[in-house]
Length: 259
Image (cartoon, rainbow, N blue to C red; front, side):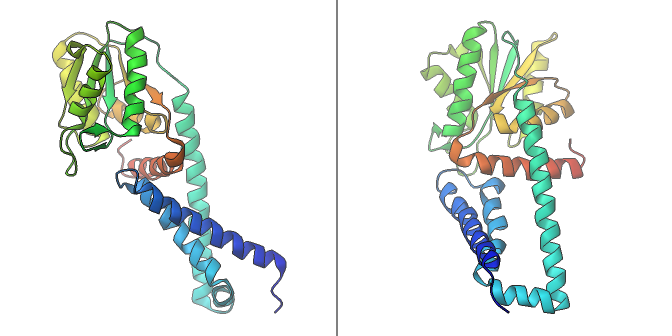
């Protein structure tokens, strides 16, 4: 059968797109702590790249063999489902990030992210810069920096965050460390214990990366915290990874009844 130009173009598109997704994982993992959002592009891209490279024998197999046809329709279903979920969850994330809190909260919880050596990562620095903007407009707001010490981290994320804020002129008397949490759920659960010990009703907000606000707000609600999120901008070269991670996390949390 003649190999038509549309098929050649489709093959080239599969190969290039698959290779680009795998390259994304290779590059981003050198810049960020490894997580599912970093790995997902390679998981999605590898089958597309293989199909592109071996396009003619694989499409013939999918056309002439019953197992090939099953594989073909499973791939179509899987990629279609992922595209739909990714579009839905990304829309939810973008919508949630647009609903920013007003100044003047009693407590601002800053959710931790990875650190390198004893320095905050660029992602965490952006959260902290957003924190500084907010509390300079809200002189009575207390800050809870929330994040424990990972296996590959020399100090807790909370301590690294406190050091960053103090170095940028924030009075350390306004900063409370929560340095035991290892997940978003624990960020809020452990921070709530601190807030409950303060007594009285508190207006609470939290700071995280914009793409994370939707899930974080839903998790906060499960811990009895009604709070709006203040979104720090994503770093452009890992934005895709962040939204992919949120897609997987939101889907998992919903299916497991955690949201």
